[in-house]
Length: 424
Image (tube, rainbow, N blue to C red):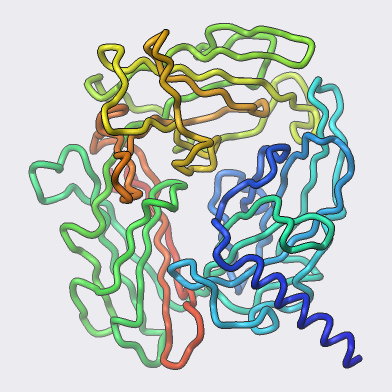
């Protein structure tokens, strides 16, 4: 029994050290596609688990190698700033922290062969005991250093209630282009609290890299902490996302210019996109940069949807590249990350930006964003490519972190969501 406990401790240590410093929401194997993590029954929800309800997350992905692989997963608790917590896995998990993925299915009908893997978390082998930021790591052959991909998720408690509201910014220069979030946090369930022990993080839609973080409330009224600063929780409103419907690879949808069947699959050429910055605002229902895997011609989208090579084209103003800025294709289809995998490349011979992605059949939403080449600031700039309009429908998620005196990690003691149109 002593040897068994030592083995579990050593395994947990390997998982921790291999995950420390590893980028979140990143795919390391080019054969891995369509990584999804969301609450059961809600494919458009953020990956949040409540300690009181334990509604599981569904995690799934496709492997284009199309041969069985021995995949495992582990989870690691992080602090609010995404640094590793000072806890061993035994402190925040009940069960084992190295679990084999045993549920898989082989693709059928599709030209592109793949294995579809999926599992639920929490499950009977592994459950969280603490709230906070977590990262899920999937790796090969029980080797935590052979990482395939990572995905973040959140475990929350219900100790603080949140009353959020979307307002028009007071500053007239941005009142018609930005949205302001105000929130009041009720902390009466906490026995002892200093305002500086709380941190509030706000996520617009599904983008983590430009989340706003506040460490001090604007006002304190007994148990109520009000966050109502005119600078901290101001977000560019953007526009409703562009869309691409490739649920069918036989019939062209309205955004598809050409379908080109080949022996290796279908090439999809999207109609060229242009800047919408000076265009009129139109309201329509979108997925806020997310995507939905679906198929109009089969019953099981998990294993019967095919893959297509999709070509995106962006026509810059005056047919000239942006000076000092990189252009990115932004959305869940590129992991909501501004990096090499999402950067558009300028073709001087055609005077256009281009990007090629291998995508599973479904309905995709996306935007184009700019970032200064020399700036480390992760904030995304929609103003030149999409335009910003106060009326845009956006979803905001608020996470409240708490570090009690003497604690070794940041708990999430409350969370809430608010839609920018719910006040209308």
